[in-house]
Amino acid sequence: MFIEPIEQCRLSRRQVLNLGGAAIVATAILGLAPHDANASPRKAKARLAELTKGATLEKGRINISLPSLTQDGTRTRIAVAVDSPMTESDYVKALHILAERNTVPDVATYHFSPLSGRAEIVTRIRVAKSQTIIVAAEMNDGSVYYAKARCKVARGAGGCG
Image 1 (cartoon, one colour):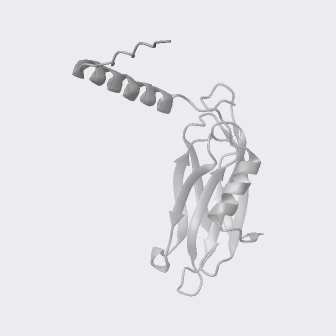
Image 2 (cartoon, one colour):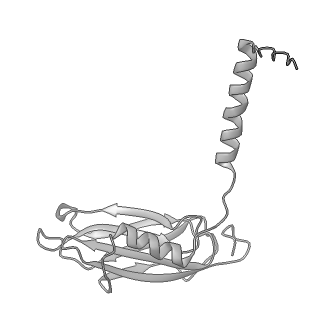
C-alpha cells in the first residue's frame, strides 16, 4: 500500500498577516465582551480574607457615608473615615472597599501612613445592583476593623436594580 505524501502548505506573507490580525481582533472582542456579574457575598468575604491575610475582623472605628437609595449606580458617592490618631504607634495602613454583587468584589484599596494625617476618603464607586458594601481598615499593628453599608439602586437607573 502506497500513501502519497501530503503537499506542503505554503502561506504568503499577506495570508500570515491576515491570520494574525484576525487573531488579535478575536482576542480583543473576547476581552471586551461583558462579563457575567459573578461576585457574591461568599466571594467578597474570600477576597477580604485574602487582602487582610486571614486576620480576625473586628467591628468599629469605621464610619461609612453611602446613600441608602441611589438613582445612578454607575457613580455612587461614598465617604469613609476611620477613627485613628494616625501616629507612628497607631495608624491605618490600608483601607479596602469591596462590593458583594459587582462583577468583581474589589472596588478600591487606599494606602496610608502617619504622614497622611487622617484616614479619610471620598470618592464615587460603581454599584452594579442593590447590595452591601464592605469596608475594612488594616491597622499598623495587624488588627483589622470592618463596617458594612447597604445601597439600593433604583430600577432602570443604569445599575441593574
